[in-house]
Length: 266
Image (cartoon, rainbow, N blue to C red; front, side, top):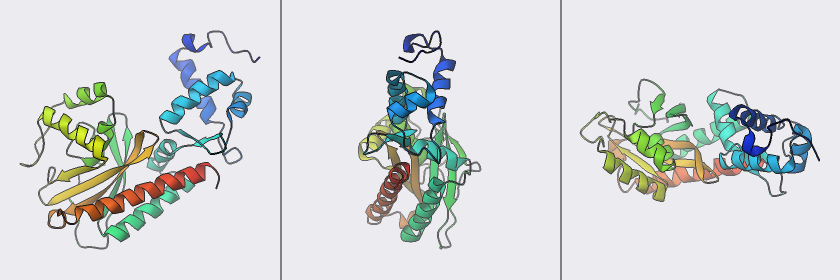
């Protein structure tokens, strides 16, 4: 049986020890080790297999690892999204660039990809279509989660814990237009609908004349990114919405599938 450092039992680990172990597990994945089993991770890190299992399951639930059909593990979309937000030149970044370009081409609308960073959303990529419409966007690509007119924020908040949701919604909303939802209880009700439908809308809440619709890119049960279309109000009709949502969901499903295939080395 492997021996671990004093205080290494899970119940006695300090947060720093826990962080070190999680990072030690993640650092084993590289170009030569794209897929690793629990036994291999135990051998490489020197941690008990049971300890590795608990850390791996946490990382999997957070989207930083994914389980493969062979029973091993590979890096997951949450990790890939963070690398992409830093501009890392990885195969995951290529997948995202390809799918974002394809979505802009098929929908003929502006595409915006956002990732969560703490209590903010970072819109890491915006690609306008080949049309004359230039949407009015916030001055910063970093938006607070409490700004619930934003479809990225809506989706990340919808999947957050009830405690986190209520804490963030305690922040007073700014009314940008007559359409901006600022009532806290109505915002909570909206988030329930967003969670059940897995789609969010902005109907001229930030800028009159500009609307948006977004869907999550999922890892297990949580979104690791949100992909959205920004559309002028005259094209944001009830007849057009099903088509926009279909384009978004197809793009999200394609990204999720290719992330999994890359993680499995296929």
